[in-house]
Image (cartoon, rainbow, N blue to C red; front, side, top):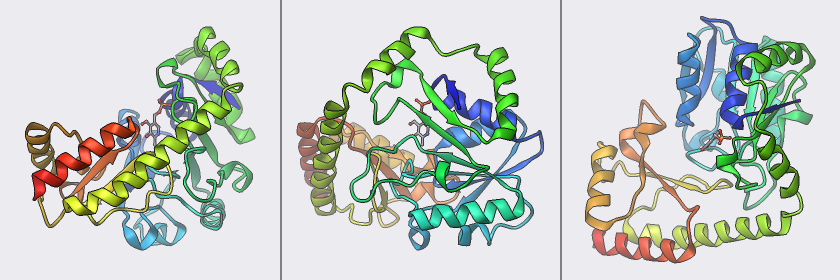
Length: 289
Ligand SMILES: Cc1ncc(COP(=O)(O)O)c(C=O)c1O
């Protein structure tokens, strides 16, 4: 286990410890853009793998079977940003076996654990002995600006991460660590926040289809709804700019997450106030009518 400067610091350590320059690492497309940017900065080849409704927008073992060429690593996120979809415990276990048998390093981004709307998310920590688990205080614990996270490491990577950490970051700030110790006394407040996300999600699931955004990925967790808007645009950045200018509602274009189909998708975030969800949905309904 290592304490890191947010999960971003965790990714820097994990990628440097686990992969050499020229390694090939698969990531889901759509997926969190920092994976490919950090990998690229280290001369590690990022292999974006298209995922969609057939695998609930996740990089499953069956999807990995279709990737041409050898891989050195796989990064998964469950719940995912931008789709909110999750891997089942069975799918995590299958991924673990897929990776073990091929000596592929599994990196599991579990930053949205605790923010789920049905079953709890399964951790790779108990299912994949050689996986690296990345987590942080930024989401469920709502401490984004404190830059604090942690890695659960397999024994063979502990020393390498210690050496990298001592040179790159030394340690995360002491004040953040003290604050994080106190956050464990705030669980009822944090769970109330998750309940508020659920209310926001329910509002948008009800209202967005009325505004013409009906094809939504299953938002099992996190605080996002990922919409297929192929019937409206193939230029999501222009569409989002126009939406912002004409309604004041800000959404993220899919191109941030998906180099293939991102022009035809959008990500709505529902991390804000309930009243803002109601107002945004009303404005979008008016805009589209
Ligand atoms: C999937 C995912 N991983 C990691 C991060 C980065 O989090 P941190 O603040 O811990 O660096 C984010 C932030 O949005 C994210 O969505």
